[in-house]
Picture 1 (tube, one colour):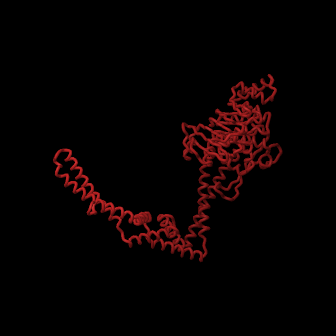
Picture 2 (picture 1 turned 90 degrees about the vertical axis):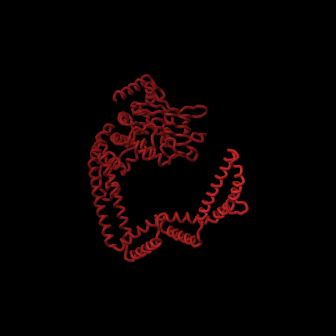
Picture 3 (picture 1 turned 135 degrees about the vertical axis):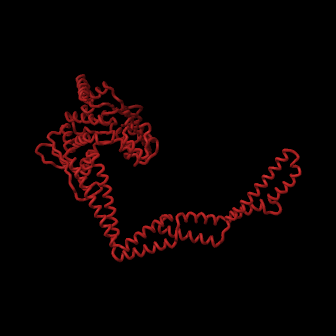
Length: 558
């Protein structure tokens, strides 16, 4: 769940921290106090769009950090597959905001925006007024149905994607392989020429690397040979003063006093060792010099061979391995072209088999969806009734389009009648903004046990509702809060009264500037905030009493 939110230098927020709790977290405050800014900052930390005018006036940079506890093993496994490892079951998503750019981090390590968004999608789901519009797009209805169908449909969908991609691959292969006689003749001729050219070269794996090393050695050998010759001259060849002769003379000169005492004997022994080492060095230097001996003919052969290999690389691949692999593919293609009719018949048979398997899996997928469509619509209808939708009828109509995709052949659409006697019509044609909010809440309630996301944020879920309906919405939010963390911004006391944790957002003037402050309320403070929402600027004893009673009733229903 979302443990902590830290915001710095964003719009009206100077710097603030919020420690959220489990269950239903409610945020209230006057209009313009900064509630939307706070939720907007969460969106920024999760990879939302950023512009420099979002920074607090006068600030050169800002920061948003979200710290989550990750207890679900499935989510931990998914994060680990992204090379993100929670530290002590904690993970921090942060975004440093600067003029014109931003830097995203997870647990202090810089990540791409795509990685940030992918990780965030596992941890939190923000549902605002804009998200209600997803219900108006019928493409999303099938995704909701599949989510409700849960574990039974997931392996079938995976299989559907596999067989469909196989079918598409074979279909493209058949289209590309279809040739007339002239095209077949030209392709066969070119393939035979290419195979012959590669086979004539008689390439071996790693040959190019060995030749390049040899060629570099040859081109550098003159410099190396000169250095070796000069060294050998000074150590062994120069008749006037080479090191070996000088050492021999020194040995003969010192030999006469080598027995004089122990020190002389040790020095004489060192001279003999030096002479032995120098002789060994000269022998190894001579052998080393021989390794750089080559003929002009050998150099030319190496150069020509390298030119041939580089010519083949330019045509067939970056490495010898690539060239040889290309040759094998062309040999296979030659076999196909030489027995073209049989090849095409086999390919058509494979395509027919893949099509049959695709149809079979899509039928299975359709059957599961049809089975769950009625159950899902009944569950949504029950939740809608509890949200003060009376005599509502709802159907999820499933249509086999006959056009296959990786998701099968189905389309789904919600049909609804909100009043008795009305015909069922597409949801997009009849629902208002407030009704959409409640319908989405009903769906979220039904899906509460199917979704993995541990934290849900509802922004302005109370749009267009009041009275008994608001009571019902509060109850539903609290119900969802029993299985996952819920964070909700509201203007309605009926919803705020259902809070497990209540926060007040205030805007204050300090030091010639306006700042937003967030305070966690205790029981008494929460009642006073409810009274403010109920009574506005004039909070009387009777309003306080009503607020207290509202809070007690909400808590008593748990």
